[in-house]
Image 1 (cartoon, rainbow, N blue to C red):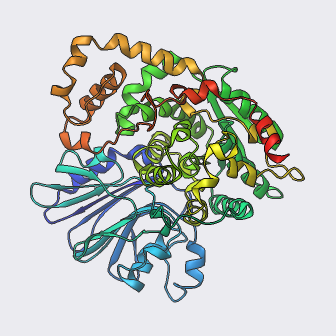
Image 2: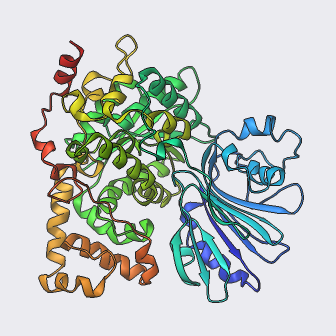
Length: 540
């Protein structure tokens, strides 16, 4: 939705603050605004206008002395206006404004009342509160300069210059000068021992439909990212059903190296089945390689998986925004929630499987959420993720892991999600899509993308250079030429050691080959691709 910057401290250069904020102008191409509060602090906002296009400019002042900036969407804002905050006078129709009024009403204790994805700062005199949504769908960084001023921003690059140290703000926490960091989000399912609910397929289905419905809230055109895999196909199908009878047209988008890419073939079938206005985008390997340097600047990571998967998403995002679409639904999170990655098949026990799903969801802010946000917001496009809704997570993450294990259902990953939407009388998807085997996004655009990328990076890095990796990059030392190549570009953009430490590498567990491609797991080549046949046997 935007880029935010807050500087908490005295004697701040407004011109420098404006320069820092402008490094994120791609996040908010519609409006830009900066204010200095009466206490001398800075709030700056680069706006992508989605809700309340005409009057929702930020920062927004509350009823009296409090000001706020917000990146994200608050899906229950209308309900809050009509109930909890019915006595408050609002200046805008923006979903964001409820945050400052909740602060005025409850002080620090209001985060549990928000339903949405957010990173925000509220300043009230010398007091302030900063918070990030439960899973970290929206990015947020913080740092301190040599004078002791605190900085908070949507992207790391905005505050690297003034700060002596920069870190990622932890998801599910808030920060105030009185309390410092407080973890406000601690659901029961964080404890794998308590995540043992009985399987309820109808509950899975209805809660995901509800989650998707919330995310249709927009005053601008809407699209869906449709890879043809289970997760994006389900969100696309649900959205199409929910929009039936409305004037809203649903655009779907898929990308691949050519028309025969696995994802494009599958997405074509889904789009035809649903009746979306479908768009196929092609990119060449040469274009992908040429974009990597700029892409890493946007992503602020050198993680191999993130770079591989973000490249097609980056090209797709530009195509989408060129059409005038500002919001898309995306399927991030489902593989973490349901243990859908192929390496999950190798889990040594049910409890270890459950612990890994919890760990992966808790780390989404360092991987898929980061990729989905920054590769889309590079062009001012907002990606919304129904699978990471709080209510849906309370249902899906508490399911007894025995029901998520692929081995429970003849090796079919995410069986319970598939089965929840297996409604032949009113089908959500064609059978061959509902029961399609997992392809990670970077593989599905065409296997030669990763294969050629690896070969290219092998030629860019010598054996002698790779031998110096430990000396050059002691933190998260790259172990392959591909990883070294990305790391060297990252270091060129962000040479500070603190920048390198904000990155967490994605490495699959329980397999000999630690390459993050799904094809590196032996289950990919051994799997019976006729997964629908297995499903038929289970139903018999």
